[in-house]
Image (cartoon, rainbow, N blue to C red; front, side):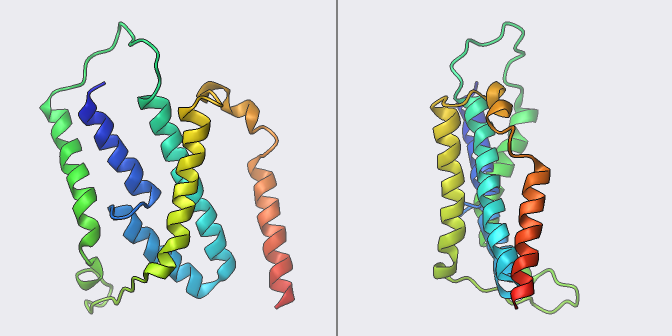
Length: 177
């Protein structure tokens, strides 16, 4: 694989995982801040989901770009500049666009939307993203779990189990208020 493709995909994974200074970090911060101000339980779920997002993006990254198997003979090459140029532009925008305060330009009533950034608030979301990345690195980069065998390791944890745990926890906490 072309090294440029690897780096472009790594930038995309870092952005989607919400790692600073990439664009995804700033949007994730605004969403989590709104959740924190609204409901601490929703904020906690948001942190957990942020860690899951980082995990699955880096599971994909390590599974695709760090595997040591020989290249398939039917591989069609890396593509032309018509394929690479959009990747380069998107990677560049991902690095730069997070610093643009879109709240000053885009709002429902035309008035600037105030945004707030507090480094103390950013610690937990970044730690959750890094935890997801490190877990993916441990499991998939080091080949503790082969991607094709992932299902058997997680079989006991179904979506229904997760939904019932979250709903029961949320209901019991809301009744205490």
